[in-house]
Image (cartoon, rainbow, N blue to C red; front, side, top):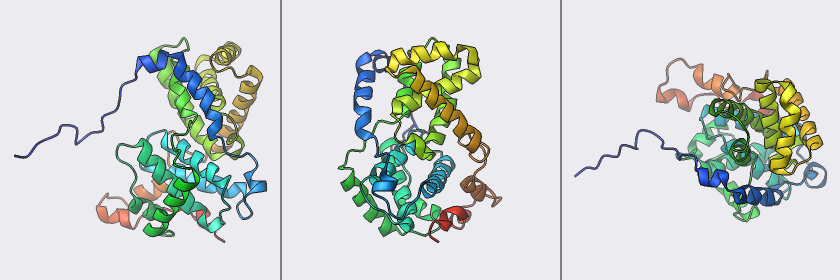
Length: 295
């Protein structure tokens, strides 16, 4: 007899657990653990000989576009960037291998966070076949070994619910601020200047930046004091990080589309007109500037 499953056609998501959100031990554990997963802030000077910061940004933007195109969970992109920065902190990578490393980090992060993870075959297509299936498998083993299989890294996204649940906000305000903060965190992940910032600082500053637009800048000082009480981060550091985020937004938001606009990968995917399966195999999925790294 054939069995039917009502969950087959839709992805079931877990409900927010009030016990985990209201237990201060969870937040304290995150704050205590986050420094363990910070990459080296000087790996471009001390480890990498062929890769420059602008190359990281190009590949990071491509990775963000792939995650948007595939509608990945919000955690996937920040987590994959954490993997990539930690690998670049310990392994000297050639510039021709950087996109392979980025694809591999997305592959692993997707497996950890997605109900339906990205497939290796799809990632090969997104690189415009500049890497092979075997390349991806070999690189996956390298990344796992270098990270010592410690994949549950703490990212800024992990702090959002913990912080928002401790603020005096309505449900609608909390959800709006969360959506904007997720956008800010994604943009911060593409910018190397935020790589060495503790995730709690990036999350708090992203929430403050989002709230200042929603609730008004006159409430920023009060909010920063509240965030300091929650995370223990000095208000001056939070304000500085918020200013850096606002500057990064002014620079990147017209070009980036982490809130759902058009992008290289999205534009290429949707420009074919119909959505036949044959279109997927021939979609141009690697932006030109990613290929320019190899030159």
